Image (cartoon, rainbow, N blue to C red; front, side, top):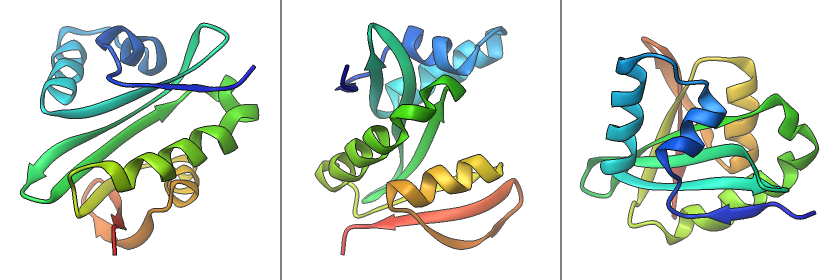
Length: 129
C-alpha cells in the first residue's frame, strides 16, 4: 500500500503520531495547525507521520515534523512527498530545529541543510532557490 499525503493534518493525526497527553500539548498542536499548513502521511488507514509549517515571518516558516518508528519502511515515500511539497508552499525559506539524531537524518532526507547550533538543538534550513 502506498503512503497518502493528506492536507491539512488534523489535531487527531498529530495526537496519534506525537502521543499528546497534556492540555499544554493539545494547545501547542492546535496552535501549530491554526498558524500554518500541515500534512498527514497515512498508510493502510494509520497516520504514520505529520509535517507542518508554522508561519514565522513573511516568506519564512518553521517546519515541525514527527514520524512513528513503525513508518521506517515508508521513510523514502514520506521524504519524497515532503521534498515535492515544500516548493509549493508560500515560503521562500523554511527552517526546523532538530533535537535528535533521527530528526537530523529525516531533515536531511527532506532536503534541509544544516545551518547552525541553536539553544534547543541544531537549526536546519530549506531554501527554494
